[in-house]
Length: 122
Image (cartoon, rainbow, N blue to C red; front, side, top):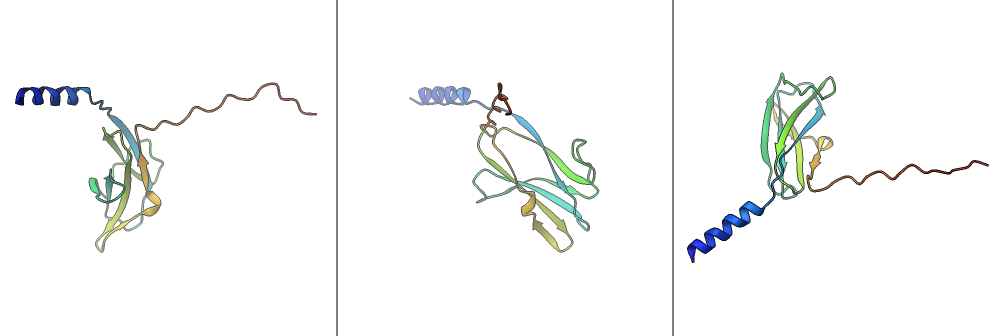
């Protein structure tokens, strides 16, 4: 019986699709910041996990605009992931609500409709 259960477990794990993805997230820097924490949650903000702590000066990904900080993040979840950025200095860290980000690999943007044809202006 244990072998059957183990075989079923292996089949389920093998059949579960996993898709890795990488995204770059950028945000405006804050004067006086000594570091930034890049956090994520998969349970709508009940629990947060710090993915990266960036200490100033930061090596920012080349795709971020000048004067911004950023990270490249690789994930494999196919559910909604929320990200937040915390700005830190000697007094502590503050969540930057304006830098809230989200990612959901399972969602896809719908295709844009085709351009209209045969329009006439009278």
